[in-house]
Length: 266
Image (tube, rainbow, N blue to C red; front, side, top):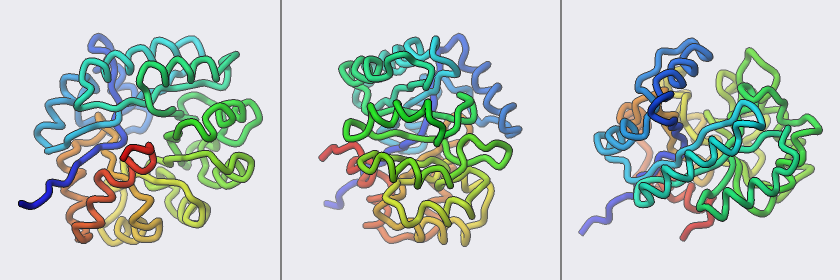
């Protein structure tokens, strides 16, 4: 019997039903990219079934400190309702008085890590007030960072190495092959680090040769499959990844082996 490859989408966003379409539209407006789907949990589960995806890591980011707990509570409730299909990352914000307390709450309620989106949360990865977020996560849980956007300075890939120098035990997943719209900078600054990268929101902007080149440059042990639902259809994202022609053993790592290693799940 051929062993089935576990397929995990490591980068998806969900929102409560009453605001899902509005939130999805707002993201599309932020990036000036039409959204494929509505951002609801129900649509995510349907999309997973169509795409043959076994599990998704769901997350969201709070635009300010006031909304951190409501965002985390929603992600917690979604994961508890579908523990066989979902894993979750909560969010933090540098304006929180006690991010360690919020992290404890998240982890005790089953979340596995932290998602930050500096461009939307309006803080720079390297600025001093963000340091307390890395401090509470270092050696405790991984962080998923939106990384890169040539329109802003907040999430430039060049800020990651100084952060890692100060927090060497920090486990980072740098989204969008390390730097959305700044892939050259990501390759220059991150390839020689130990960060993981996911391939979400990248394939639309590059041909197969460039995608293959970047994935191989980071290495088969550091790249994760992600779709950035609801921005892109995960079935089409899977087709792009599989069209790159990587061998089956490498695909197992990209689809699930690497994220399970990052999360410390055996």
